[in-house]
Amino acid sequence: MKYRESFFVQTVRLIRKNRKTYQRLMVSILLTFTFLFSVFFYIDSSSFNRNKETLSDPSYLVTVNIPDHINRSGTEFKTFFSQVQSTPDTRIAPVQRFALASYPPLHHVIHSVNYNYNIYPKSFGQLMIQNQPAALQDGSREFKTLDSVFVTSQAQSLLVQSGMIQNGRIQLYLPDRHGRWGFKDWTVQTTVDASELSLQVRNVGGHLTGNVEVFIPGEAVNREAFGEGLEEQFLIFTPYAIDILNLARRYEFEASASAQPQVHSRADMRQSIQLKWILGSLIFLVLAVNLQGSFANALKERRYEIGLRRALGAAPQDIVMQFFKESVLLILTGALLALFLVVDGFLLFRLFCYFTSAQIYTIVLTASSVLTMLTMTGSLLLLTGLSFSVSAMETNIVSALQGAGE
Image 1 (cartoon, rainbow, N blue to C red):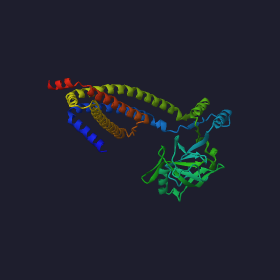
Image 2: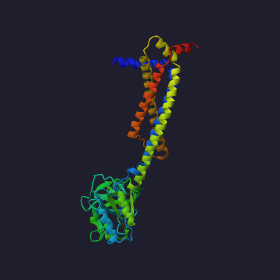
Image 3: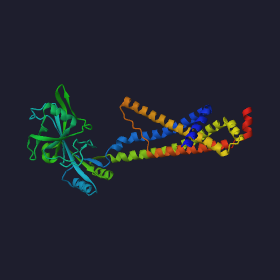
Image 4: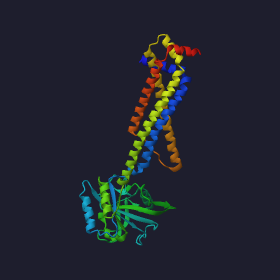
């Protein structure tokens, strides 16, 4: 341990002694690694930020809207769904939505509040809002009873304050199973994260206004009683989203799936990886030549020192090890400092994006980039360090000492 410590101290002392020679070399090393690391951070981060929203969408979901002119009992409709149901590991969840404006019977409700009923099967598996998974406060996967409902978390607190929700129950005007419209008490089972909803309720001057999203079990109401105001949609959960999407379009149904744009996003990311390898290789070659020249210039300024040590009997391997240790320490210090500067630069850019456009810029460095950076750093270290030390050993003693006196 003492030997390693004395070696480190000795190397640092020699670098400090020749600091004027190494200052220019250190600037070259710093610029070299700053440029190299910046390329990897920029390509990885840019590719990720371009595609992060698309790739965050569920790839297993296909949304199908059936046009009004399609006969629900017709052959075309039945054939499509029979083919979907025969697809392995595929599940269909019908979702219906009905926007109920202020009906005359709602005399006790402030008329600026509208109820939007989202009708789901009792066991829905996963609640979806605008094709995105919705977070339920109690982690439900189904309605506990047929008189249970969900409301948005924002609306729930306001409805409690206004007295529309009392003791965990809310009165809603809906058709029962027989199609008879009327008021009925429903139990608010839990709340839904409303971040993906564009229609929300708010308190204006002590009065509620806006739209209340209410999620109800489809088995509890007569859907035909809603008439034409009911929008029908089918959520298909499948590992074969692209195949299902193409099948729906073949039948001229309105369909969308995140899996399709994700294919283009992954292709874009693959192109970014190829670009990164090409640029990285070219930069590595240019930087290796640049560092080689910088070390050669530093060596010229220490030729007298090398010749003097050789004349005093220093073994060639001692000269080699001395300069190799100095080059290793310089390169490692420069690489770490360059990494620190690059990360700080991207953090400042992240703050700039946030304050100017409220955009969250994610700084990304993939595992392959980390491995490549380590490999390139180690290669530059070995190539330049060995070249520097071997060139020092080959210095001619006589010419070096004579050159000092000129």
